[in-house]
Amino acid sequence: MTTFEAYLDSHTGTLLTEELVVVLRNISEATRQISDKLRSSSLSGLTGTTDAINVQGETQKPLDLVSNEIMLEACRTSPSVSFAVSEELDVEVPIHADGKYAVIFDPLDGSSNLDVNVTVGTIFSIVEASAATHVLKCGRKQLVSGYAAYGPQTHLVLTIGKGVQIFTLSGQGDYLLTTADARIASETKEFAINAARRPSWDEVIVAYIDAATDTPGYNMRWVGSMVADTHRIFNRGGIFLYPADRNKPTSGRLRLLYEANPIGFLVEAAGGAAIAGNTPILDIEPTSLHQRVPVIFGSRNEVAKISEAYKVQSLEAV
Ligand code: AHG
Ligand code: MN
Ligand code: MN
Image (cartoon, rainbow, N blue to C red; front, side, top):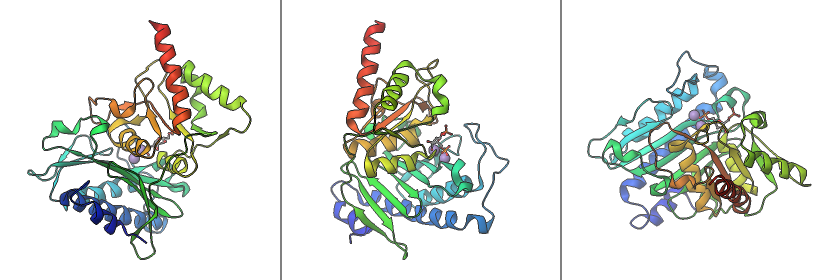
């Protein structure tokens, strides 16, 4: 079986620089450590919540903080990393003055599921950034993105700009390639949305969900950890929606830089689509580090139905 190391080696000098390989090696090691911390969290007291509140106004869990520290350490041990940006940190952290890559991450995604023992993840994105202002670039300029899904198995899902590879953590601590060139099925009959938020949906989303619900064979799933919902979509197709509040069309729950962009980059590299209403997520020019956006992604044909409906709506509005 191909190891993560061998996969990186085979692309060094073409899609990956030697410096990027070091960063990726350190990130993969960080996810291995986070996976270990999660496995024993009830035994080591890393449960419940802390008194701390992050810049988004969310109460931090001990494992949010531990995972954040492990990811920061991965950045510090990578000489080419210039800045780290995290969901759990107010502003970007300078790492190495002569570094050229920023690592942008959600150290633990789905952390409300932690004490429930449900799959959570780490999401990361790497962009070229020798100055802090370079961090705010559109998702198409990502060099690499990926996530680790910590479930019954730990999987590492990676794109280096071409194709998506899925690695599985072995009992010996090695990531081994278990799905080469993962593709997202273009058709689906499964959607993921928090239905409790229906009163805030716009007409396009209401119409889409009503039509799906009225069509025999459609199924709904909602884990509450975007990585887990994404992982299911990689496995058997589907569509994920965290749409805008209809009174605030550019709003959303999920964050552009460390949730929507890295997942959008992976989804497009696997033949799926990712939009924020009228625009592809990857075309959005960010204006701030913790900016939130509407997020709709997954099987291409299903996302196209929503994209078309938004186009019709905006033409009617003219
Ligand atoms: P995080 O734990 O990093 O704050 O992200 C949680 C996100 C995402 O993982 C998930 O899809 C969504 O929030 C869940 O939202 P609801 O609480 O509305 O279900
Ligand atoms: Mn998250
Ligand atoms: Mn998080």
